[in-house]
Image (cartoon, rainbow, N blue to C red; front, side):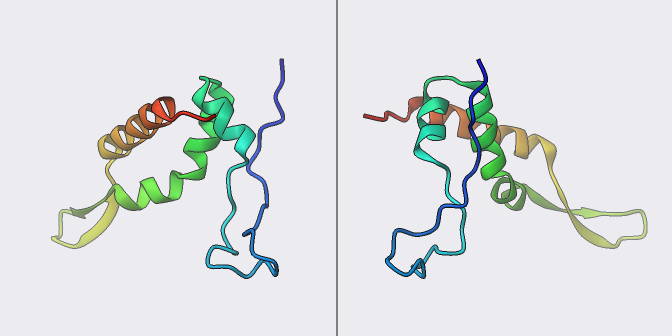
Length: 95
C-alpha cells in the first residue's frame, strides 16, 4: 500500500500568509498521524523534516593534525537525537 505522504508547502494560517512562521514548511497532519501509528515512511518524513535542526544540534568542534578547529556533525549524537525524536513521535497521541 503506497501512501502519498510528503512535506507540503503549507504556510501559516495567517490571512495573508505572513505570520511568524510563514517561510517554514509544515508537516501535514496526515503525516504526523501516520508516524504516530508506526508508518515507517511517515517517520522518515518526520526525521527528514527535522534533519537540519538535528544536524545543527549535533555539531561539535574537531581539531585537525595542525591544530585548526572546525565543526563537524557528531554521528553518535545525531543518531541519539533521531532515536529520541522517533520515541517522542510514538508517544505522541493524536485524537
